[in-house]
Image (tube, rainbow, N blue to C red; front, side, top):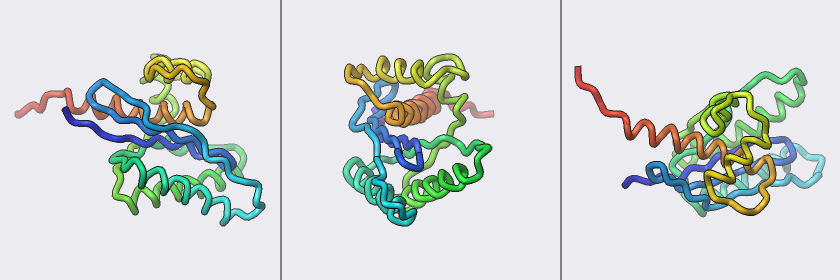
Length: 168
């Protein structure tokens, strides 16, 4: 059976969530999850370096083949959009440096694939993440969002492998 290691990353300006799973068919094993908390350094380059180094370390440790990320969505606050764009840039740069396949999903796709309802709340998503991965401990919302991204990618990959190839 083919298995992939998938890292889901939920970017944030101060807190970036990550969730790493091993995916084999419809079996998902959580390898690591948590948050990267940027210290209050008042220096954007230092903040981005902290995220870069933390994610680099995780990638080198777990060697993921797939990186799952939420598709860009519009923020009313331009500053928030710019800050998240910087973090996304770091994440995509890492995917390029480590030759990791990138899969992007909308918030609605992620929620639908895990809860069956595209407008589910964060606590509903966290409940399903914990249930699907048999996690007993509490999970921070940013980490559960990242695990949800990993699960969504894993489900998509397993669906793709199960679909027969039709020759016309």
